[in-house]
Length: 509
Image (cartoon, rainbow, N blue to C red; front, side):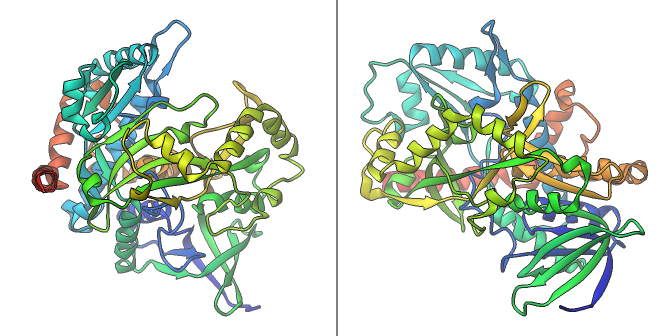
Protein backbone atom coordinates (compact mmCIF):
# COMPACT_ATOMS: atom_id res chain seq x y z
CA UNK A 1 0.00 0.00 0.00
CA UNK A 2 1.37 3.38 -0.96
CA UNK A 3 0.56 6.43 1.15
CA UNK A 4 1.07 8.72 -1.84
CA UNK A 5 -1.93 11.01 -2.19
CA UNK A 6 -2.53 13.42 -5.04
CA UNK A 7 -5.22 16.05 -5.53
CA UNK A 8 -6.77 17.07 -8.82
CA UNK A 9 -9.77 18.97 -10.18
CA UNK A 10 -11.47 16.20 -12.17
CA UNK A 11 -11.13 12.41 -12.22
CA UNK A 12 -12.66 10.41 -15.06
CA UNK A 13 -13.07 6.67 -14.45
CA UNK A 14 -12.90 4.63 -17.65
CA UNK A 15 -11.33 5.63 -20.98
CA UNK A 16 -14.38 5.04 -23.18
CA UNK A 17 -16.31 7.41 -25.45
CA UNK A 18 -18.16 9.07 -22.53
CA UNK A 19 -15.06 10.01 -20.50
CA UNK A 20 -13.19 11.00 -23.67
CA UNK A 21 -16.09 13.29 -24.68
CA UNK A 22 -16.50 14.84 -21.23
CA UNK A 23 -12.73 15.38 -20.92
CA UNK A 24 -12.60 17.05 -24.35
CA UNK A 25 -15.57 19.33 -23.56
CA UNK A 26 -14.09 20.38 -20.21
CA UNK A 27 -10.65 21.06 -21.72
CA UNK A 28 -12.31 23.40 -24.24
CA UNK A 29 -14.35 25.15 -21.54
CA UNK A 30 -11.75 25.33 -18.72
CA UNK A 31 -8.29 24.48 -20.12
CA UNK A 32 -6.62 25.22 -16.78
CA UNK A 33 -8.43 22.42 -14.90
CA UNK A 34 -6.32 19.37 -14.10
CA UNK A 35 -7.87 16.11 -15.30
CA UNK A 36 -6.83 12.50 -14.61
CA UNK A 37 -8.20 9.36 -16.25
CA UNK A 38 -8.02 5.86 -14.74
CA UNK A 39 -8.60 2.86 -17.01
CA UNK A 40 -8.35 -0.84 -16.05
CA UNK A 41 -7.33 -2.04 -19.52
CA UNK A 42 -4.20 -1.30 -21.55
CA UNK A 43 -5.77 1.14 -24.01
CA UNK A 44 -8.69 3.53 -24.54
CA UNK A 45 -12.01 2.36 -26.01
CA UNK A 46 -11.50 -1.34 -25.37
CA UNK A 47 -14.85 -2.17 -23.74
CA UNK A 48 -18.33 -1.00 -24.89
CA UNK A 49 -16.87 1.78 -27.08
CA UNK A 50 -14.76 -0.66 -29.11
CA UNK A 51 -15.73 -0.97 -32.78
CA UNK A 52 -16.10 -4.76 -32.52
CA UNK A 53 -18.11 -4.54 -29.29
CA UNK A 54 -21.03 -2.38 -30.44
CA UNK A 55 -23.34 -1.94 -33.38
CA UNK A 56 -21.75 1.48 -33.93
CA UNK A 57 -24.52 2.79 -36.11
CA UNK A 58 -24.51 6.43 -35.42
CA UNK A 59 -27.99 6.02 -33.90
CA UNK A 60 -30.05 8.85 -35.33
CA UNK A 61 -33.41 7.00 -35.15
CA UNK A 62 -33.55 6.99 -38.96
CA UNK A 63 -33.96 3.22 -39.16
CA UNK A 64 -34.42 1.80 -35.64
CA UNK A 65 -38.07 0.77 -35.43
CA UNK A 66 -38.03 0.36 -31.62
CA UNK A 67 -37.75 4.16 -31.26
CA UNK A 68 -41.16 4.67 -32.92
CA UNK A 69 -43.80 2.74 -30.98
CA UNK A 70 -47.30 2.14 -32.31
CA UNK A 71 -49.89 3.50 -29.86
CA UNK A 72 -53.16 1.78 -28.95
CA UNK A 73 -55.06 3.99 -31.42
CA UNK A 74 -52.73 2.88 -34.26
CA UNK A 75 -50.85 6.19 -34.49
CA UNK A 76 -47.05 6.30 -34.26
CA UNK A 77 -45.26 7.97 -31.33
CA UNK A 78 -42.16 9.63 -32.81
CA UNK A 79 -41.11 11.63 -29.70
CA UNK A 80 -38.23 9.27 -28.82
CA UNK A 81 -36.97 9.28 -32.41
CA UNK A 82 -36.97 13.10 -32.43
CA UNK A 83 -35.01 13.24 -29.16
CA UNK A 84 -32.38 10.74 -30.35
CA UNK A 85 -32.03 12.45 -33.74
CA UNK A 86 -31.57 15.87 -32.12
CA UNK A 87 -28.99 14.38 -29.73
CA UNK A 88 -27.09 12.86 -32.66
CA UNK A 89 -27.09 16.21 -34.45
CA UNK A 90 -25.40 17.68 -31.34
CA UNK A 91 -22.68 14.99 -31.54
CA UNK A 92 -22.16 15.75 -35.24
CA UNK A 93 -21.77 19.48 -34.55
CA UNK A 94 -19.19 18.85 -31.83
CA UNK A 95 -17.15 16.44 -33.98
CA UNK A 96 -17.34 18.97 -36.80
CA UNK A 97 -16.05 21.71 -34.48
CA UNK A 98 -13.11 19.49 -33.43
CA UNK A 99 -12.22 18.76 -37.07
CA UNK A 100 -12.59 22.42 -38.11
CA UNK A 101 -10.38 23.48 -35.18
CA UNK A 102 -7.80 20.84 -36.24
CA UNK A 103 -8.13 19.15 -32.84
CA UNK A 104 -9.13 15.99 -34.75
CA UNK A 105 -7.82 15.09 -38.18
CA UNK A 106 -8.95 12.63 -40.88
CA UNK A 107 -12.67 12.41 -39.97
CA UNK A 108 -13.06 9.49 -42.42
CA UNK A 109 -11.17 7.40 -39.84
CA UNK A 110 -14.20 7.55 -37.52
CA UNK A 111 -17.28 8.58 -39.56
CA UNK A 112 -18.55 7.70 -43.04
CA UNK A 113 -21.81 8.55 -44.87
CA UNK A 114 -24.07 5.53 -45.29
CA UNK A 115 -27.80 5.05 -46.07
CA UNK A 116 -29.96 3.96 -43.12
CA UNK A 117 -32.88 1.66 -43.96
CA UNK A 118 -35.77 -0.12 -42.24
CA UNK A 119 -37.05 -3.37 -43.79
CA UNK A 120 -40.22 -5.29 -42.92
CA UNK A 121 -42.25 -8.20 -44.27
CA UNK A 122 -45.94 -9.08 -43.94
CA UNK A 123 -48.99 -6.87 -44.43
CA UNK A 124 -49.25 -5.77 -40.80
CA UNK A 125 -45.59 -4.71 -40.63
CA UNK A 126 -45.75 -2.98 -44.03
CA UNK A 127 -48.76 -1.00 -42.77
CA UNK A 128 -46.78 -0.02 -39.61
CA UNK A 129 -43.74 1.05 -41.67
CA UNK A 130 -45.89 3.17 -43.98
CA UNK A 131 -47.50 4.95 -41.00
CA UNK A 132 -44.05 5.46 -39.47
CA UNK A 133 -42.75 6.90 -42.75
CA UNK A 134 -45.71 9.29 -42.99
CA UNK A 135 -45.26 10.47 -39.38
CA UNK A 136 -41.49 10.99 -39.71
CA UNK A 137 -41.59 12.54 -43.20
CA UNK A 138 -43.56 15.51 -41.89
CA UNK A 139 -40.69 16.31 -39.51
CA UNK A 140 -37.76 18.36 -40.89
CA UNK A 141 -35.25 16.17 -38.99
CA UNK A 142 -36.19 13.23 -41.23
CA UNK A 143 -36.23 15.11 -44.51
CA UNK A 144 -35.36 12.99 -47.55
CA UNK A 145 -36.77 9.71 -46.22
CA UNK A 146 -38.09 7.45 -49.02
CA UNK A 147 -40.57 4.58 -48.80
CA UNK A 148 -41.08 1.75 -51.28
CA UNK A 149 -43.00 -1.52 -51.62
CA UNK A 150 -41.78 -2.04 -55.18
CA UNK A 151 -39.50 -5.12 -55.42
CA UNK A 152 -37.64 -3.54 -58.37
CA UNK A 153 -36.87 -0.38 -56.39
CA UNK A 154 -35.82 -2.50 -53.40
CA UNK A 155 -33.53 -4.50 -55.73
CA UNK A 156 -31.77 -1.18 -56.54
CA UNK A 157 -31.45 -0.27 -52.86
CA UNK A 158 -30.53 -3.66 -51.35
CA UNK A 159 -29.52 -6.16 -54.08
CA UNK A 160 -27.95 -8.64 -51.62
CA UNK A 161 -31.19 -8.85 -49.62
CA UNK A 162 -33.55 -8.98 -52.62
CA UNK A 163 -31.57 -11.49 -54.70
CA UNK A 164 -33.26 -14.96 -54.83
CA UNK A 165 -36.05 -13.71 -52.53
CA UNK A 166 -39.56 -15.12 -52.90
CA UNK A 167 -41.93 -12.22 -53.59
CA UNK A 168 -45.03 -14.00 -52.22
CA UNK A 169 -45.01 -12.01 -48.95
CA UNK A 170 -45.42 -8.23 -49.02
CA UNK A 171 -42.20 -6.37 -48.27
CA UNK A 172 -41.35 -2.69 -47.78
CA UNK A 173 -38.43 -0.48 -46.83
CA UNK A 174 -37.60 3.10 -45.98
CA UNK A 175 -34.28 4.71 -46.89
CA UNK A 176 -32.48 7.84 -45.70
CA UNK A 177 -29.26 8.71 -47.52
CA UNK A 178 -28.05 11.10 -44.81
CA UNK A 179 -27.21 8.29 -42.35
CA UNK A 180 -23.69 7.55 -41.13
CA UNK A 181 -21.46 4.75 -39.87
CA UNK A 182 -19.51 5.77 -36.77
CA UNK A 183 -16.47 3.90 -35.50
CA UNK A 184 -16.63 4.81 -31.81
CA UNK A 185 -13.48 2.86 -30.93
CA UNK A 186 -11.45 4.94 -33.39
CA UNK A 187 -13.14 8.18 -32.26
CA UNK A 188 -12.43 7.40 -28.59
CA UNK A 189 -8.75 6.78 -29.30
CA UNK A 190 -8.51 10.00 -31.34
CA UNK A 191 -10.12 12.04 -28.53
CA UNK A 192 -7.85 10.46 -25.92
CA UNK A 193 -4.75 11.17 -28.06
CA UNK A 194 -5.94 14.79 -28.23
CA UNK A 195 -6.40 14.90 -24.44
CA UNK A 196 -2.80 13.76 -23.95
CA UNK A 197 -1.64 16.87 -25.81
CA UNK A 198 -3.68 18.93 -23.30
CA UNK A 199 -1.73 17.49 -20.33
CA UNK A 200 -4.50 15.13 -19.26
CA UNK A 201 -2.87 12.30 -17.29
CA UNK A 202 -3.89 8.91 -18.70
CA UNK A 203 -3.37 6.00 -16.29
CA UNK A 204 -3.86 2.62 -17.96
CA UNK A 205 -3.92 -0.67 -16.00
CA UNK A 206 -5.21 1.27 -12.99
CA UNK A 207 -8.37 -0.03 -11.29
CA UNK A 208 -10.47 2.15 -8.98
CA UNK A 209 -11.34 -0.07 -6.00
CA UNK A 210 -13.13 2.38 -3.70
CA UNK A 211 -14.71 5.86 -3.60
CA UNK A 212 -15.40 7.72 -0.36
CA UNK A 213 -16.31 11.27 0.65
CA UNK A 214 -13.77 13.18 2.72
CA UNK A 215 -14.66 15.56 5.55
CA UNK A 216 -13.82 18.57 3.36
CA UNK A 217 -16.27 17.48 0.62
CA UNK A 218 -13.75 16.03 -1.82
CA UNK A 219 -13.93 12.51 -3.26
CA UNK A 220 -11.13 10.09 -2.34
CA UNK A 221 -10.41 7.20 -4.72
CA UNK A 222 -8.35 4.14 -3.91
CA UNK A 223 -6.62 3.16 -7.16
CA UNK A 224 -4.71 -0.08 -7.67
CA UNK A 225 -1.82 -0.17 -10.15
CA UNK A 226 -2.42 -3.56 -11.79
CA UNK A 227 1.25 -3.93 -12.74
CA UNK A 228 2.82 -3.22 -9.36
CA UNK A 229 -0.12 -4.05 -7.07
CA UNK A 230 0.40 -0.74 -5.26
CA UNK A 231 -2.67 1.16 -4.10
CA UNK A 232 -2.62 4.95 -4.27
CA UNK A 233 -5.03 7.56 -2.98
CA UNK A 234 -6.32 10.27 -5.33
CA UNK A 235 -8.73 13.05 -4.40
CA UNK A 236 -10.79 15.27 -6.69
CA UNK A 237 -13.46 17.95 -6.53
CA UNK A 238 -15.46 16.21 -9.26
CA UNK A 239 -15.60 12.54 -10.30
CA UNK A 240 -17.25 11.07 -13.39
CA UNK A 241 -17.84 7.30 -13.36
CA UNK A 242 -17.84 6.30 -17.03
CA UNK A 243 -16.73 2.69 -16.65
CA UNK A 244 -19.47 1.07 -18.75
CA UNK A 245 -20.87 -1.97 -16.94
CA UNK A 246 -18.38 -1.33 -14.13
CA UNK A 247 -20.05 1.96 -13.22
CA UNK A 248 -22.79 0.43 -11.05
CA UNK A 249 -20.40 -1.08 -8.48
CA UNK A 250 -18.49 2.21 -8.16
CA UNK A 251 -21.72 4.21 -7.86
CA UNK A 252 -22.75 1.88 -5.02
CA UNK A 253 -19.38 2.39 -3.29
CA UNK A 254 -19.84 6.17 -3.41
CA UNK A 255 -22.83 5.80 -1.08
CA UNK A 256 -24.80 8.71 -2.60
CA UNK A 257 -28.56 8.41 -1.97
CA UNK A 258 -29.29 8.86 -5.72
CA UNK A 259 -27.51 5.52 -6.33
CA UNK A 260 -29.77 3.52 -4.01
CA UNK A 261 -32.46 1.06 -5.24
CA UNK A 262 -30.75 0.73 -8.62
CA UNK A 263 -29.66 -2.59 -10.08
CA UNK A 264 -28.24 -3.85 -13.34
CA UNK A 265 -28.99 -6.75 -15.67
CA UNK A 266 -26.22 -7.82 -18.07
CA UNK A 267 -26.98 -8.78 -21.68
CA UNK A 268 -24.22 -9.98 -23.97
CA UNK A 269 -24.21 -10.02 -27.76
CA UNK A 270 -22.89 -12.06 -30.67
CA UNK A 271 -22.54 -10.90 -34.29
CA UNK A 272 -21.97 -12.71 -37.55
CA UNK A 273 -19.16 -11.08 -39.56
CA UNK A 274 -18.82 -11.70 -43.30
CA UNK A 275 -15.40 -12.94 -44.44
CA UNK A 276 -16.21 -12.93 -48.18
CA UNK A 277 -15.25 -9.60 -49.88
CA UNK A 278 -17.58 -10.34 -52.83
CA UNK A 279 -20.59 -10.53 -50.48
CA UNK A 280 -19.45 -7.43 -48.53
CA UNK A 281 -19.26 -5.45 -51.80
CA UNK A 282 -22.90 -6.20 -52.68
CA UNK A 283 -24.33 -4.38 -49.67
CA UNK A 284 -24.06 -0.69 -48.83
CA UNK A 285 -26.44 0.33 -46.02
CA UNK A 286 -27.51 -0.25 -42.46
CA UNK A 287 -30.74 -2.22 -42.66
CA UNK A 288 -32.83 -2.67 -39.52
CA UNK A 289 -35.66 -5.17 -39.16
CA UNK A 290 -38.24 -5.67 -36.41
CA UNK A 291 -37.42 -7.29 -33.05
CA UNK A 292 -38.95 -10.68 -32.38
CA UNK A 293 -41.67 -10.82 -29.70
CA UNK A 294 -40.02 -11.01 -26.25
CA UNK A 295 -36.65 -9.76 -27.51
CA UNK A 296 -35.03 -6.77 -25.77
CA UNK A 297 -34.89 -3.61 -27.95
CA UNK A 298 -31.11 -3.90 -28.22
CA UNK A 299 -31.60 -7.20 -30.08
CA UNK A 300 -33.29 -5.72 -33.15
CA UNK A 301 -31.80 -7.65 -36.12
CA UNK A 302 -29.77 -5.55 -38.51
CA UNK A 303 -27.42 -6.06 -41.45
CA UNK A 304 -24.79 -3.35 -41.26
CA UNK A 305 -22.10 -2.11 -43.58
CA UNK A 306 -19.29 -0.98 -41.27
CA UNK A 307 -15.94 0.74 -41.83
CA UNK A 308 -13.32 -0.73 -39.49
CA UNK A 309 -9.57 -0.15 -39.87
CA UNK A 310 -10.25 1.65 -43.20
CA UNK A 311 -11.84 -1.52 -44.54
CA UNK A 312 -15.48 -2.17 -45.44
CA UNK A 313 -17.06 -4.91 -43.33
CA UNK A 314 -20.50 -6.52 -43.09
CA UNK A 315 -22.03 -7.53 -39.74
CA UNK A 316 -25.34 -9.17 -38.86
CA UNK A 317 -26.92 -9.43 -35.45
CA UNK A 318 -26.95 -9.01 -32.61
CA UNK A 319 -27.91 -12.31 -31.07
CA UNK A 320 -28.54 -11.74 -27.39
CA UNK A 321 -26.84 -13.84 -24.77
CA UNK A 322 -26.36 -13.97 -21.04
CA UNK A 323 -23.23 -13.76 -18.91
CA UNK A 324 -23.14 -12.62 -15.25
CA UNK A 325 -20.20 -10.35 -16.13
CA UNK A 326 -20.85 -6.59 -16.27
CA UNK A 327 -17.87 -6.04 -18.59
CA UNK A 328 -16.46 -8.17 -21.40
CA UNK A 329 -13.25 -8.35 -19.35
CA UNK A 330 -15.14 -8.45 -16.05
CA UNK A 331 -15.78 -11.01 -13.30
CA UNK A 332 -18.39 -13.79 -13.22
CA UNK A 333 -19.34 -12.46 -9.76
CA UNK A 334 -20.32 -8.99 -11.09
CA UNK A 335 -24.08 -9.61 -11.05
CA UNK A 336 -24.05 -11.30 -7.64
CA UNK A 337 -21.95 -8.60 -5.96
CA UNK A 338 -24.17 -5.83 -7.39
CA UNK A 339 -27.11 -7.08 -5.28
CA UNK A 340 -27.25 -4.97 -2.10
CA UNK A 341 -29.82 -4.67 0.74
CA UNK A 342 -31.19 -1.44 -0.83
CA UNK A 343 -31.76 -2.92 -4.32
CA UNK A 344 -32.65 -6.53 -3.43
CA UNK A 345 -36.44 -6.06 -3.68
CA UNK A 346 -36.00 -4.08 -6.92
CA UNK A 347 -33.86 -6.88 -8.42
CA UNK A 348 -36.28 -9.64 -7.31
CA UNK A 349 -39.24 -7.71 -8.75
CA UNK A 350 -37.39 -7.33 -12.06
CA UNK A 351 -36.65 -11.08 -12.13
CA UNK A 352 -40.33 -11.92 -11.58
CA UNK A 353 -41.47 -9.41 -14.23
CA UNK A 354 -39.00 -10.48 -16.91
CA UNK A 355 -39.36 -14.26 -17.05
CA UNK A 356 -40.07 -14.08 -20.79
CA UNK A 357 -36.84 -12.10 -21.33
CA UNK A 358 -34.87 -14.65 -19.29
CA UNK A 359 -36.37 -17.48 -21.36
CA UNK A 360 -35.54 -15.59 -24.58
CA UNK A 361 -31.91 -15.08 -23.50
CA UNK A 362 -31.51 -18.77 -22.61
CA UNK A 363 -32.88 -19.73 -26.05
CA UNK A 364 -30.45 -17.30 -27.72
CA UNK A 365 -27.47 -18.72 -25.79
CA UNK A 366 -28.39 -22.23 -26.97
CA UNK A 367 -28.53 -21.30 -30.68
CA UNK A 368 -26.09 -23.16 -32.92
CA UNK A 369 -24.25 -21.30 -35.68
CA UNK A 370 -26.60 -22.87 -38.25
CA UNK A 371 -29.67 -21.59 -36.35
CA UNK A 372 -28.10 -18.14 -36.39
CA UNK A 373 -27.50 -18.53 -40.13
CA UNK A 374 -31.23 -19.28 -40.53
CA UNK A 375 -31.99 -15.87 -38.96
CA UNK A 376 -29.47 -14.23 -41.29
CA UNK A 377 -31.21 -15.92 -44.26
CA UNK A 378 -34.35 -13.90 -43.45
CA UNK A 379 -32.18 -10.97 -44.63
CA UNK A 380 -29.92 -12.72 -47.17
CA UNK A 381 -31.83 -15.72 -48.58
CA UNK A 382 -28.76 -17.40 -50.12
CA UNK A 383 -26.26 -16.75 -47.25
CA UNK A 384 -23.60 -19.47 -46.98
CA UNK A 385 -22.28 -20.56 -43.56
CA UNK A 386 -18.66 -20.58 -44.72
CA UNK A 387 -18.86 -16.85 -45.56
CA UNK A 388 -19.65 -15.86 -41.96
CA UNK A 389 -17.75 -15.98 -38.64
CA UNK A 390 -19.12 -15.54 -35.12
CA UNK A 391 -17.85 -12.55 -33.09
CA UNK A 392 -18.54 -11.99 -29.38
CA UNK A 393 -19.58 -8.37 -28.79
CA UNK A 394 -19.39 -6.35 -25.58
CA UNK A 395 -21.54 -6.55 -22.45
CA UNK A 396 -24.46 -4.18 -21.88
CA UNK A 397 -25.86 -3.62 -18.40
CA UNK A 398 -29.50 -2.58 -18.54
CA UNK A 399 -30.58 -0.39 -15.62
CA UNK A 400 -33.19 -1.77 -13.21
CA UNK A 401 -35.00 0.76 -11.03
CA UNK A 402 -38.38 1.58 -9.49
CA UNK A 403 -40.40 3.93 -11.67
CA UNK A 404 -43.85 5.49 -11.43
CA UNK A 405 -44.87 4.09 -14.80
CA UNK A 406 -43.46 0.59 -14.42
CA UNK A 407 -43.49 0.11 -10.64
CA UNK A 408 -40.89 -1.91 -8.72
CA UNK A 409 -37.99 -3.42 -10.63
CA UNK A 410 -38.54 -1.86 -14.07
CA UNK A 411 -35.96 -2.75 -16.70
CA UNK A 412 -34.79 0.38 -18.53
CA UNK A 413 -33.48 0.17 -22.11
CA UNK A 414 -31.71 3.50 -22.36
CA UNK A 415 -28.81 5.59 -21.11
CA UNK A 416 -29.12 6.95 -17.55
CA UNK A 417 -27.06 9.60 -15.76
CA UNK A 418 -27.09 9.41 -11.93
CA UNK A 419 -25.79 12.58 -10.27
CA UNK A 420 -25.32 13.55 -6.61
CA UNK A 421 -27.49 16.46 -5.41
CA UNK A 422 -24.43 18.70 -5.07
CA UNK A 423 -23.12 17.77 -8.53
CA UNK A 424 -19.76 16.54 -7.18
CA UNK A 425 -20.06 13.03 -8.66
CA UNK A 426 -21.91 11.61 -11.65
CA UNK A 427 -22.21 8.11 -13.10
CA UNK A 428 -23.35 6.88 -16.48
CA UNK A 429 -25.35 3.64 -16.61
CA UNK A 430 -27.28 1.80 -19.30
CA UNK A 431 -26.83 1.03 -22.97
CA UNK A 432 -28.19 2.07 -26.37
CA UNK A 433 -28.29 4.69 -27.88
CA UNK A 434 -25.30 5.54 -25.64
CA UNK A 435 -22.27 6.44 -27.73
CA UNK A 436 -24.22 8.21 -30.48
CA UNK A 437 -25.69 10.64 -27.95
CA UNK A 438 -22.44 11.03 -25.96
CA UNK A 439 -22.12 14.79 -26.49
CA UNK A 440 -25.70 15.54 -25.36
CA UNK A 441 -25.36 13.23 -22.38
CA UNK A 442 -22.06 14.82 -21.31
CA UNK A 443 -23.52 18.33 -21.73
CA UNK A 444 -26.30 17.18 -19.39
CA UNK A 445 -23.61 16.12 -16.87
CA UNK A 446 -21.92 19.54 -17.20
CA UNK A 447 -25.25 21.38 -16.70
CA UNK A 448 -26.14 19.31 -13.63
CA UNK A 449 -22.68 19.33 -12.05
CA UNK A 450 -21.51 22.87 -12.84
CA UNK A 451 -24.74 24.93 -12.84
CA UNK A 452 -23.01 28.13 -11.71
CA UNK A 453 -20.35 28.05 -14.45
CA UNK A 454 -22.64 27.03 -17.33
CA UNK A 455 -23.89 30.59 -17.89
CA UNK A 456 -20.29 31.78 -18.22
CA UNK A 457 -19.42 28.84 -20.52
CA UNK A 458 -22.49 29.24 -22.76
CA UNK A 459 -20.82 31.34 -25.51
CA UNK A 460 -18.08 28.70 -25.90
CA UNK A 461 -20.63 25.86 -25.88
CA UNK A 462 -22.59 27.66 -28.63
CA UNK A 463 -19.39 28.07 -30.64
CA UNK A 464 -18.87 24.28 -30.45
CA UNK A 465 -22.56 23.38 -30.84
CA UNK A 466 -24.52 26.11 -32.71
CA UNK A 467 -27.89 24.49 -31.90
CA UNK A 468 -27.22 24.46 -28.12
CA UNK A 469 -30.39 25.47 -26.25
CA UNK A 470 -32.47 25.47 -29.45
CA UNK A 471 -35.07 22.94 -30.63
CA UNK A 472 -33.83 21.86 -34.05
CA UNK A 473 -37.21 20.46 -34.98
CA UNK A 474 -38.69 23.95 -34.74
CA UNK A 475 -35.87 25.49 -36.81
CA UNK A 476 -35.74 23.81 -40.24
CA UNK A 477 -33.35 26.48 -41.60
CA UNK A 478 -30.87 25.74 -38.80
CA UNK A 479 -31.12 21.98 -39.53
CA UNK A 480 -30.29 22.67 -43.18
CA UNK A 481 -27.40 24.94 -42.20
CA UNK A 482 -25.97 22.37 -39.77
CA UNK A 483 -26.35 19.48 -42.24
CA UNK A 484 -24.54 21.44 -44.95
CA UNK A 485 -21.77 22.58 -42.62
CA UNK A 486 -21.12 19.22 -40.90
CA UNK A 487 -21.27 17.29 -44.19
CA UNK A 488 -18.62 19.58 -45.67
CA UNK A 489 -16.34 19.55 -42.62
CA UNK A 490 -16.61 15.78 -42.12
CA UNK A 491 -15.97 15.18 -45.84
CA UNK A 492 -19.21 13.32 -46.57
CA UNK A 493 -19.58 14.29 -50.21
CA UNK A 494 -16.02 13.18 -51.08
CA UNK A 495 -16.48 9.94 -49.13
CA UNK A 496 -19.84 9.21 -50.78
CA UNK A 497 -18.22 9.57 -54.20
CA UNK A 498 -15.17 7.44 -53.30
CA UNK A 499 -17.32 4.82 -51.62
CA UNK A 500 -19.68 4.62 -54.64
CA UNK A 501 -16.74 4.27 -57.07
CA UNK A 502 -15.15 1.52 -54.96
CA UNK A 503 -18.49 -0.24 -54.63
CA UNK A 504 -19.15 -0.12 -58.39
CA UNK A 505 -15.64 -1.49 -59.09
CA UNK A 506 -16.06 -4.34 -56.59
CA UNK A 507 -19.51 -5.26 -57.96
CA UNK A 508 -18.20 -5.27 -61.53
CA UNK A 509 -15.25 -7.42 -60.47
